[in-house]
Amino acid sequence: MGREIGSTEYTRSQRTRYRRELRRNLDLFETFLDTAEFVDEGTVGVELEMNLADRDSMAPALIADTLLEDLDDEQYVHEIGRFNLEANLPVTHPEGTGLRELETALGAAVDRADAAAQARGARVVPVGHLPTISEDLFADEAWRAPGARYEALESSVMEARGEEITLRIEGEGRGVDTTFDSIAPESACTSMQLHLQVPPEQFAAAWNAAQAIAGPQVALAANSPFLLGRRLWHETRIPTFVQALDTRPPEYAAQGVRPRVWFGERWITSMFDLFEENVRLFPALIPESREMAEEPLLTEGHSPRLHELMLHNGTVWRWNRPIYDPGTDVPHLRLENRLLPAGPTAADMAANAAFFYGIVRSLVHERRPLWSRMSFEQADESFQQCARWGLEARVRWPKVGRVRVADLLQEHLIPQAMQGLRELGADAQGIARYQEILTERARTGRNGARWQIDTVTSLELRGGTREQALAEMTRLYRAAVDSGEPVHAWQVPARQRG
Image (cartoon, rainbow, N blue to C red):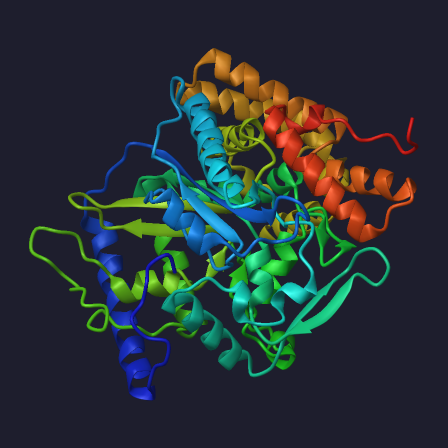
């Protein structure tokens, strides 16, 4: 769904032809996967989504169109919300100083966009949910960025569902229980997506490892506790994204039809398993054929484009998504890790990336794989519990039993991830830096979500309303991002004015 499309409406015959071509793409990909030569450099990459907030009120600022014109840089692109911005960072390698260079690039991407935003009376806020979002934002279509792909996506989701989108998330009080006549809540979800290039023979192990570790990974990085004025899950992005793009009416959900934002249901033996599931289980949302896109299936001397299969893959939002890229010469395969929120600081985000790349490397090369000792249902349960409770969650873990996830991270997983970074050839200075950040975050229990919750509580105890507390907390959050200090070192304001 990152590419522009040519239409927002499709006929029945177009949908029928698309289904036929999708199966043809799948058969071609199966053969190609078994016989082709793929790039194997182990490169890593990052996509960072950010929020735009008014400098004074900290309410969402619908200025992405103008800001992109000001920036005039292909690194920055639209996201679905007009108060969103995405930065695509250069591909790098984890060995040597690669991760510290990634940290520098993350900081530079945020700072440059923020400088442009300040010239327009706004600020860039790297956070999972902008805390000041209210239902009023989604009252009309002004929230949505321009582009046929976004209009087509919304139209297709709403048509498939046949009724309003229900957002129902447990939390303080009665939580959130409201409906929207659009997919607008999806725009509230801003993430940091990590890419890892993987050879075909290692993809299944890498995907299984990423799925197994998803719970502790999201607990460590949780940064989205507030939505629509309510304190909900520590990583509320997870249920919000699932529900905002849910094409199923309740009856289909009751029948076991899978949601399009999906954790999955089994360990895999090949990348092909995931693409086959996508085609077998999910009808097309955007049935734009390669002819409509003016893109050939095969070009002499090049890898197949597989337009229909890749477009379809972009409308099944797995938390760990398979990516096939035909490239310009030799194709490559990537694992796209999609479950992390944006922010808080460049140091925190680089540390989150270091944890993921290191732990996947270590788990892939274990003699007895973690996923052979853990059921898939157990991994899914861990993911849900950690999204809800963050570092306070308790999970069941092989050889450890039931354990507080912060202790599991501090005593086992962070050291294992750092060993994985050593095996990748990362420099000792970078490893020491990110180990300290991650360990202190787990030890103190202070990730972005915990800091936000504690700060809002403190501000409310001073006598402020929830709306005032969220706006002030967002100002303090942005100031702390400016400091560059990792979130575990951020101060929470005193509960009484001194």
